Every structure is written in C-alpha cells, then in structure tokens.
Amino acid sequence: MSIIDTPANTTSKLACLKSKGVTTVIRYYNFRNSQQLPDKRLDPPEAQALAASGMQIAAVFQQGQNSAPDFSDAQGFKAGVAAFRHARNKIGQPAGSGIYFSVDFDASTSETNQRIVPYFQGVRRAFAQEASGGPSYRVGVYGSGLVSSILTAKGLIELTWLAMSRGFRGTKEALQAGEFHLAQVPPEKILCGLDVDFNEPNPARPDFGAFTIAVAHAELNVSTGTVDVHV
Image (cartoon, rainbow, N blue to C red; front, side, top):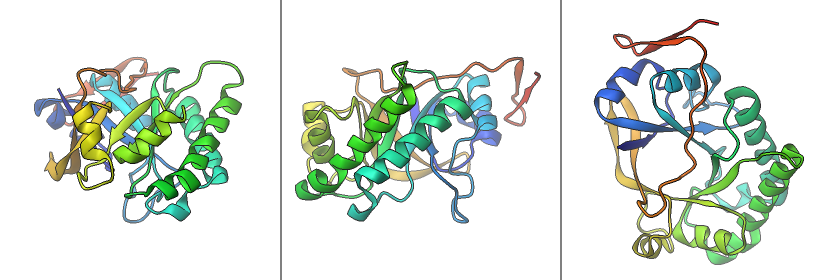
C-alpha cells in the first residue's frame, strides 16, 4: 500500500499511480488556489475520478499556516467552516472520516498553547456548528510531534499526521512511541510526473480517516487516466 500526498490534480495520472501501487491520495481543501498551485484544492471531478479508480482519499486543510500569526481562534473557526462545508457539500465526504489541518512549521510550546490551541478550538466550534448535533468529521493535525501531543492531551484532535521533518520538536519521540496515524517520509519525490510525498501508516492505528465517495455510473478510462461520469 502506498499513500501519497500532492498539491497537484491527479486525474490524468490515475492509471500511472495505480500501476505504481498507490492506494490512497491525500489532497487539499483550502479557501482559494494560487498561481503557483492552481490545482491545490480537491474539487468534485477529481474526487469522483479517484473514487471511480478505486483509490482512497484523505483530506488536509491548508491556507498558509506556516507561521504563528496564521493561527487564532477566529482563523480556526473560519477554516473549520470552510473545510466542513467543502467536504460535505462539494465532495460528499462521508461523516466519521477525517479532515486534517496543517501546522506547517516547528512551533514551540508557547506558540502551540497561545496560537495553535485556540485555532483548533475554533475548528472544533465550527464543526459543532455545522454538524448541528448530527454526524461530523474527525479532526486531525498535520505537524510536529510536540504540536500533536499537546492537541491530543487537550482533546482537540483524533488523528495525527507527522510532518516530514525529523528535526521538528517531538517528532522523533512520537515516531518512537507510535503516537501517530500517518508519518510523512522524506524526501519529496516525483511520481508519474507529479510532486508527491510518501507517507507511512501506523499498523497499530490503521484508520487514519481516509474515505471514498459514491460515483454513479462512472467508468475509468485506463488508457488516459480520466473518468467518464454518466449521470
């Protein structure tokens, strides 16, 4: 089983990815794309293509989130609402699966407690609002071992995805203790012409929040890697 994450649209590469043993693709939710990464956000056609190809999907929300000022309760609430609505209304992501939120820097203990904890409190509040007592999603973090351990202790996350850098605070310790669901593996690579990272699952925690969606009358064209959806 190969688990990759990529900021690129995978639709035209699905046949190649399957031939390389890829079984799960982690893609992004975000407010908006950029000129540098015009296909960063997972949108419905690609999600349908992934599902029709037999791939599992996992999702991470990231819009910047690579420095302490990117985190606050208000920012977390806004991100939580956007991620929940995109997952439910656009992608059709099933309840009970996971949405990770990125903390893409080596946050200190004080930064985590003062900035990142409030952010995830905002995310949780947004999820509670959007779920309105009904089914919801599990919250995960992509980040360091230190950040994930603090958020776990405070009951703010259910899923941990350790970022690639082994120099981040607490990451080596989390790996050694098995306190993770996914661990990103260095270095970055090119696969089927895409910039990707590979990820290792924790056998002791095999459910890392991946999902699939129902696609009516979809046929995968294995020669092109595209999907014809007949509604």
